[in-house]
Length: 494
Image (tube, rainbow, N blue to C red; front, side, top):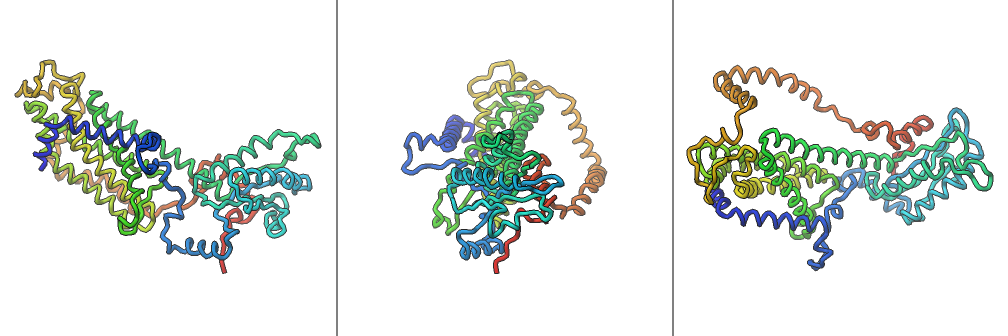
């Protein structure tokens, strides 16, 4: 099979290149909404950002106790369902709040929060709760009277991006608009001197977690690409040869993301009543896995291609022989990864299940690109792929001239790394048992640590955030004046 594939790709490499280029352009068109702008489809095709879902609770199984309780609570109190909140801590240090402080909350802080609610949320039923509230007002005061909290409820989960505009606007209110402003009637500062305002609440914590996760994901994606480029440059020392795996994985990722967007549009009745979804952040996992596996497959193929050139074969035959030789090994390696990650589809948590499908499908795309797109690129570049170590003699149109020449010694001269790995290979062949024993002894301490610390997990939300984050500072302010869990109480439905 791989002999036929190698011959087909070598002979029809232009068609292969054209096919992948068309797929890549089609994927770019989907990601940039070209089809919708040009009116090329009867129904709008969404982009990744439009179909990717955020939040956590919607991915839990419906039988989980928290979701069952939430549904019962919504049925019993449909107008008073608090999913998350922004909590503002108003406090003084070692001194009780006075009437001027409560007047500031009553006349300035609460009305401004209501303006933000009306403008950004548009739901007047979300009552801003202050110490003046007749029902819960006394509960919002600390025992020593040095602090109180103002609660702005939200109807979206604490880990949803839809909360960010509201929280950012409140943050701007506290940091910019109220600080240093003078009351036009009294001539005094709008915020009474010595009064401290801190922001916390589940929605604030969720916003900071989402921002931190996004920044971490972007850094991971960026450094993945940088490390791949650096490693390829160090391995090949030929820019065009290093560019081939990079182009392969870049095209694979874009096509994979486009396919996943289209999969979300498949009617559930077509796939047994199941609905496929993607979540925010999944694209980072796809990028990292496809870059890792795709580059690995390309390195394997290119290494074999060099060996065939070293035997004196021309470029077409070298590509065909390389594919027919390593095709089975690449397939076994790829499907081991695909099946292993695919086992995540049996997970109960929806994000794990969707990630299993998405990463497995993306790995298939990267594998197919490595088997077809990479050889086509090598055939296109010919001897120029090895620049600046390429051959100086002319190669005819069939690439069969110059047989019997030890090309590999002329393409990339031997260096210390190659001499080192030759030495390691010979050492393993001569003393396999001794090498195995030393390897096991070296790895044993790390294996021991892994076995003894496998259950060391952190479920803390604030502990994973930087101490300078707004939510962490606000949570510490709440802890100094109120009992544990006061900003996010547990609701019991009787």
